[in-house]
Picture 1 (tube, rainbow over the protein chains, first blue to last red):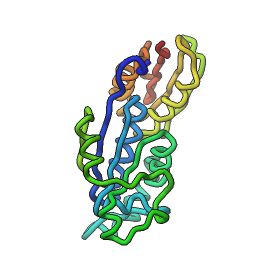
Picture 2 (picture 1 turned 90 degrees about the horizontal axis):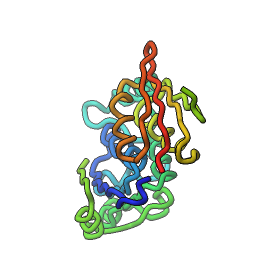
Picture 3 (picture 1 turned 120 degrees about the vertical axis):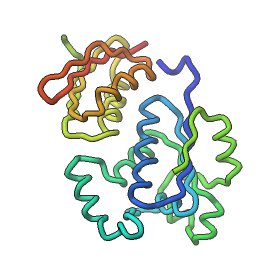
Picture 4 (picture 1 turned 90 degrees about the vertical axis):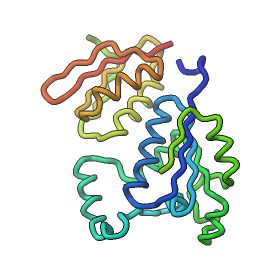
Length: 138
Length: 76
């Protein structure tokens, strides 16, 4: 199968933590691994929150009060929850990176994060992105 | 057409049908056939793309009512 050819590499930066922007990287990361790609996701600024244990993203700004409605709608349509997709990502082997500067800025400690997250800086991500076939910013 | 294994993904939304398919396919041997039943409208485009990228063969895809029956042969 894909072992003979070089694996494709996908690099994603996530800088926001609203529910919509939280779902996208999880869906893309799981799908990317299903496509036999290597997937690297770098969480920075507000995006870092998505790596916290038991984190439940909400809609942002004026849309915030509609979070419950959105989650209900997603459940009705059998869309997997953020937490479920995040677990799938870890199980399937997506690589998650927490931005070290964001951690310091926001007072987030390593023990606040889910297991398996690597702490890294912008250079590490850029090196991955330079070698990647697909790079996305969310 | 006979399948070695059947995976019913009806009711599941993207990306779960593909993830479940990948996991089911990992357990098959080359040449064996997996039948995936899906009702996600995106499946018609997603499955051919998945097969092409992963080196598996899309043997047949047929619509029955609102469901899509996808036969995939595991590649070597």
